[in-house]
Length: 124
Image (cartoon, rainbow, N blue to C red):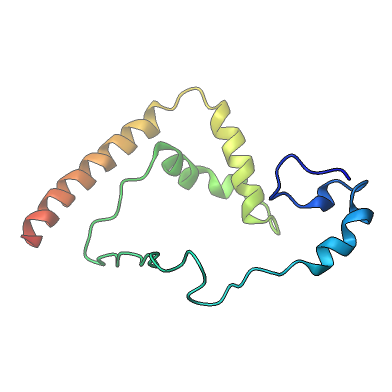
């Protein structure tokens, strides 16, 4: 009988072994997914932290500023958003002079840090 190296791995990964294992697999018990199953006692479900609507927006990256300027040129009628994004990413990699958008991104980052400092002061 051919055994997989990893006992947890499905025997169906090894098709030449599967016919001999079918009777064995049919008799195996399936693990229970019910609440309180073994190993679930200490786990707690994580809850997402609520985002404050008054918090300042994060700064945009240089790519996002570039994309805002060039999206209309790259978009064709009926073109899916994913295709536009792939095309934009490929074109962004080819751009050699990025200093204009990097300066805009730096300014936006500074704006975010200023607004965040003021926001933290109001939260105290």
